[in-house]
Amino acid sequence: MSERRIVFQGDHLWLCAGALPEVKAEVSLTLPEGVLVERVAEAEPVPEGVEALGLREAFDRLDPEAWALAGRAYQWLEWEAGHRFCGGCATELEPGEGYSLECPDCGISVFPSNTTAVIVLIGRGEGPDREWALARSPHFKPGVYSAVAGFTEPGESLEQAVHREVAEELGIRVHHLHYFGSQPWPFPNGLMVAFTADHLDGELNANPAELEDARWFSRNDLPLLPSALSIARWMLDAAVAELERS
Ligand SMILES: [Zn+2]
Image (cartoon, rainbow, N blue to C red; front, side, top):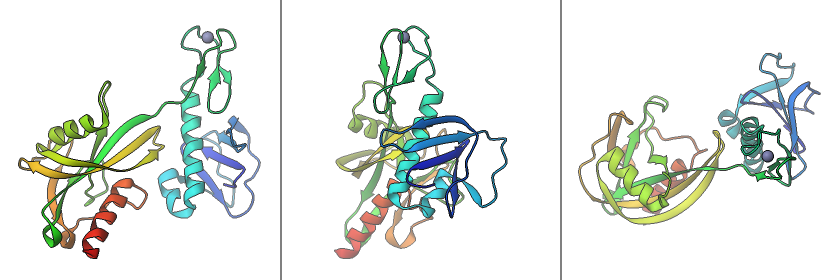
């Protein structure tokens, strides 16, 4: 990809050393910042010198700003593909202001929405005895454990979502909830909001409908952790660094 042009093939991003080749785009659109985004058919052969990489895999190869831009482009492509017609009058939508589509008939503007999820790193104990509750989802790569996460439900605050998810997935209660940070998650349109918390009571009991396992881990026996691409990893790295400072 270059700063001015991004090409996707399905959900794969094209990377190459020089300028991206010209393409026969199925979809082409321009981001508000003037970047041209094109999508070529999955059946097209990948040209010589081009590497087609999943967005997750591209994380290690791009600087954070370029990766974030690619994520935004992908989210926009996906959203647009699912919003071709006006929900009010079924007229075909046209590009509107910024990240929006407009109905030329009834004038409705629609904007991409995010699906909000929460993630929480739960700790217990102090100093070198500090441990964190990490869980394994069957979707994770072998051996990887992470903080628990889940989507917010309609009418729910972020804090309520954390307490509900923790109770549902781990069977415990937490307190001392603190905001850590947030991360756009373009797979396909998430916003991940991260918290830290302390264990209040209850025994860890992984819900088998969602998790394979959940355990307390200390700094010296941490399992494989999620990639540096995820806010779960940033939280764990920050928690371990804090222990090492104290
Ligand atoms: Zn309309």
